[in-house]
Image 1 (spheres, rainbow, N blue to C red):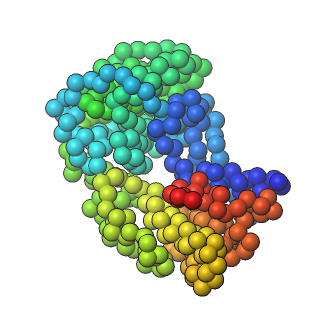
Image 2: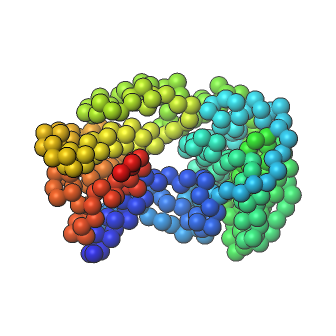
Image 3: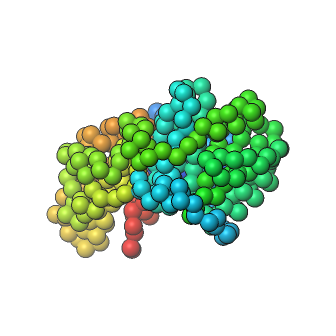
Length: 343
């Protein structure tokens, strides 16, 4: 396999995980996070895995699972977690701070705040994962403190040899973590002390411009599909529904991925049964992906577009991807696009 093939293969492996899934084991991503920035070398691209120490906030990772006793729900937490798709309605209220990123994964989610010079990443997970994450962070702690954040007792640690601080606490059915790089612990505490619960309207109004809230989702999905040949098996109404907060990149991947998976399925089935007409229909439909506006919009932000186009090219060619390495599309598209493969 050539160097370019290896790079393209790495991109395929990571395209379906164009964001870091907070349910992954801490040991897998405690020191790394897949960046959405694409590094292009000639015609090849790879989603870069970046080192942990000294990273910007956008590159900090999280993840894991294990059981631990959940804290008793507070009245405020109940109110917060039953709205906005389950997101805790917390904002950094210090002057000059704003939410710069937001995405949800069911009971897990992630938002980022910044004032331009510093940042904080707030991650939430199921309460029964709390002990695993706390032990993982404490294992690499240089210093640790007991603090209060958003009205709850929290454990604050500084990673040994760094100025990277993270605090973990339980509130209702969620384990929360607040992470950022600061000059010293007092600087971190000063910003963390301004993390406060707000009402749903205020929280939704604070979302970044590229975030699609549930009320906007039907219209956004419709617009993303305007120039896309939608396969008859794609459930468009299902794509339009959902309570999760997603940025346009994540939603674009979900929408374009559903269409691409259906056409690839048809192409594979048609080749197996010898139905040339159905195979040609699928090839022609995917060939138009080079002009889908949603993919053009996503291209500068991550590797999804390149991978989907690579699959479209393989359908029109010999059914292999990553150049001359002869990796079959049939073996790759499930992991590459997150397609459900029944075969």
